[in-house]
Length: 115
Image (cartoon, rainbow, N blue to C red; front, side, top):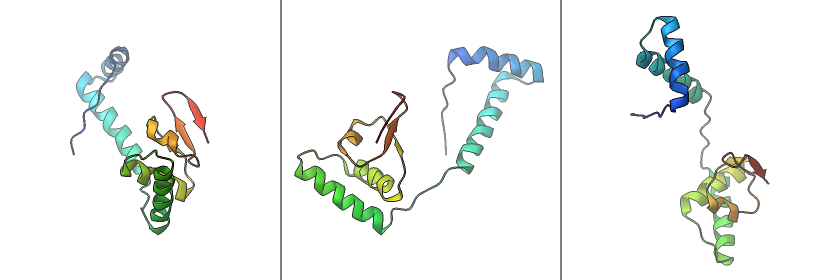
C-alpha cells in the first residue's frame, strides 16, 4: 500500500528542529514519526462487518429515502446503515448523510454534533 502524507508548512520547522535535536535527517525523522502514528492508528481501528442487521437497516433507509424523493448513493446508505445498526456515531462532512434522520453524526470540519 502506498500512502502520501502532506505535512503543512507550519509543522516543517518544529519537525526539522526536533530531528536536528535527535541527530536525524528531517525526512527520515518525519517518515519514522508518521509510520509510528499510522501503526498506532491501524492497531486501534475496528472494522465492522456488514451483517444481516446492517442489510436490514440499508433496505429500510434506502426505501425511506426513495419515498421522500431523496435518493443518495448506495455506498453512503451502506455506511449510514452500518452506523445505525451498530449504534455508532458517524464522522462525516458528506452532505448526503444529512438526509438520514436517525443517524447520529458529527462533522469535525464544522465542529458540531447532530443527532
